[in-house]
Length: 462
Image 1: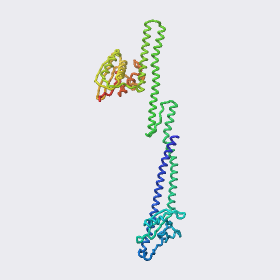
Image 2: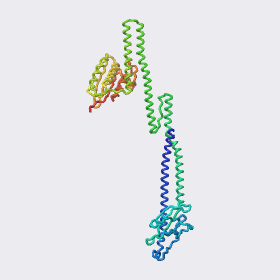
Image 3: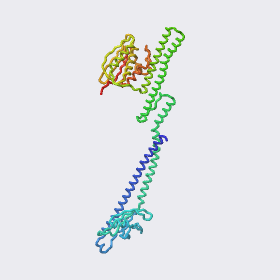
Image 4: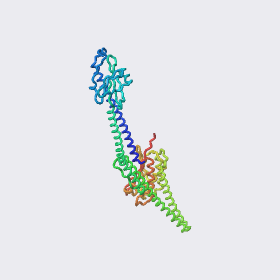
């Protein structure tokens, strides 16, 4: 069953429950109201007749003569109201002309209530007609001598209730039919954006084109937020897919060069014979190519572990020892570049010592490689209240502004640089910084030099 049908059924079912409950409540309320109104009108008419009899008769005359003067009941009756006066034996003494010789029924239960000087009302069948009867006692000298009965057929009330019931039933059915039609249309309008999302997503899957995006409705509702979320997911998938494509291409390119070197030197060794000099040169070239391949594979493995959520060995660290170790290791790489230890504030951070050293050595090695002989690289530490900044500044050629936003991307290399690397060192450094809740940024001016800054939160003992 489709969502459209389920939503329509839920909508119509809920409306049906509300309408039926409302109709039942209205019908019962109207029935009670009409019945109460009928009872009040019969009670008023019966009491009028009883009061009229009491007003026109003297209790002493009744006791002396035993005769009661009864009024003409025609003045109290109407076409739909019937009146009769009876004694305590159930004998009818007088009745309204519209009864046309017929009597209103008197049962033992009614006589018992009248004998107890209590009024009594009851619905009884008079021939083929249901009638509401109200009986009130006639009391003279603290003695009940008879009763006044007033009756009215229930046909008018029943007719009104039937008309209302017919209106409620037909109105409920018409309302449910209209609600079903309107519900189907409204559900169609509501779910049409989902259809567009589904068709667009299916088209993207079939065409394998992650550059396409879902249409975003102009309203800021759940569907608009869903479309934006899916678009962000598609963007991430597209970026990931493009990164994988670039990764495959870059890895192939990076591995092709050392493999070519190794293959060429192996063939040369086979042809050159046993010359010690040629053998040494060939082996050195092969060793260099293997070292390059080993570094590339090691960096790729580290990035793969980072993507998989590799856990770091975090603990409180004094930066002084880390900075000195990095500075000493960098001396082995400096060549003709002068290394300087600049401002050095003592600071403590919470981190992985080996990874922080790897980050800083990558920055130092990168700065040394791109600084000409006679230039300098300066390592400095600045501490503030809540953070510590470690900067690596060089006096190299600098990085053009258009390349600066991309230097932390994997396998990205600035065009025109005299020294080529794998393009993974800065990407690894960026990941290590973020894993320490830090930030790695770069500033550069062509012809002046570059400065890489690592900012980490200061560790505070609790």
